[in-house]
Length: 126
Image (cartoon, rainbow, N blue to C red):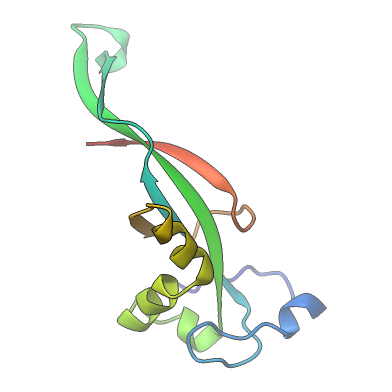
């Protein structure tokens, strides 16, 4: 996994953060992850290639994702994803709460720039 930090200097709020994996301080790398569930059954979506020709169909399913953030130190953030990282995600209080509510999927989203517990929706091919 590439290092996911921003090039901004550390602020006073990030100095008190601890790494979610090893407990070292400061944890400057922000790693967003999402916990999700299907919102709808698979549905047919018709489209045309370049807007011409016969309509083609594909199946998509709408998913609801709730985002959380793990903070990692530079050493843990530069390593590839490991079992320790997935255990930290599974033991996160937000994940435990959502699993109890019926959410069944998780994913990493290093490109996500939103806030904790923000909800997004995706239409994923089935």
